[in-house]
Length: 262
Image (cartoon, rainbow, N blue to C red; front, side, top):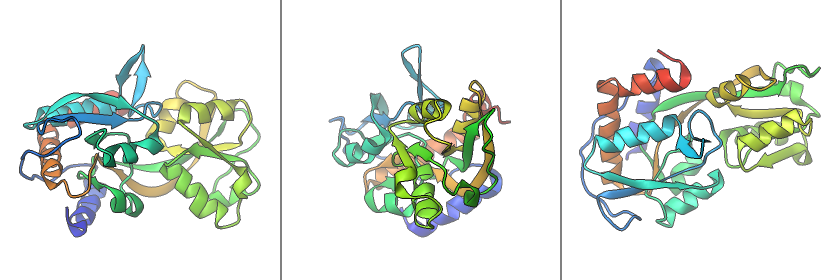
C-alpha cells in the first residue's frame, strides 16, 4: 500500500485511538497452498496480545485476527507458533501467510514486508523490581544498568539506538531474550536491572508479579498485521475486515476484554 496513505492512517489512529480504512476483498496466493486459506504466525509470551493459557493459544491478537479473517472471504487454517525474530523470515518463506504478534510498523520492517492498517498504538514501559532500590525516571538514569528486552522488538531498538549508541550503556550490558516471560524471570532473579517492554504487555506482567513500571518512554508505535510485500489483495481484505470489526463493536469488545479499555 502507498506509504503516504499508511502514514496518514497512523496519524488518524493516534488521534482517535484506532480505526481502519476500507479496501476491496480479493483472492491471493498463500503459503497454506489454498488461495483462500491462510496460516497465521505469532509468538506467544507477549500477554495480553498472544500467550498460552492451559495449553491453548489465546490473546487480543489471536481473537482480533480470527474475527478480521471471518469478516472476509478467507478462512484461517491455523496458527504457527514461532520466536518473534523468526516471524518475518517465515512470512517471506511462505511458511505463514499473515503475522499477528504485536508487531510495530517501522521503516526497517517496511523494507522486508507489508502491513495492514494499524490496529493498536503503544509506548514502551521501563520495568524494575517492585521492592528494589533502582527507580529511574528517564533513559539517562539507566546509565550503567543492565537492561533486557525481547529480540527483534521495539524495546530492543530503544536499547540499541538510544542507550548503546548514545553511550548510556555498553553493548555488554544488554541481555536479549527469546520472549518477555524469560526477561521478566531474569529481572526477578536480579540478573538484569531493567526490562523495556510495550506498555500493555508490561501492565499484564505487573498485575501478577512483584515488578513495577518506573516510567513510560513515548515511542508512538503502532501495530499492524504483517503480510508478504506486494500482496495488496490480502492487505485489502484485512483492512476491510478491520473496518467491519470496528464498526460492529467487536474491536471495542476485545479491547475491553484484554486491556480493560472502554
